[in-house]
Image (cartoon, rainbow, N blue to C red; front, top):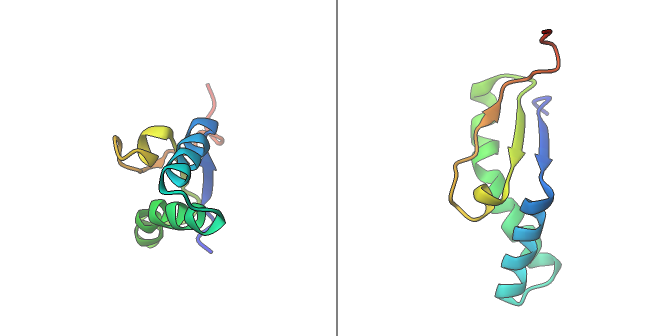
Length: 78
């Protein structure tokens, strides 16, 4: 809706799976974990404008880092 790009690193996906295993949940548990990660993004999107790129890392999943939009480097030249 806001033309944002969302990327999960492989390590982030493994961290989500570990959390679900720890909670002994199935697909609903995975969904709950992902939705929890997405809350910040959903609230921040309108303030950051269109075209932001978000990368969810293992540190974000584990709560060691805060999620923030990354600058779009696609249009920059050297």
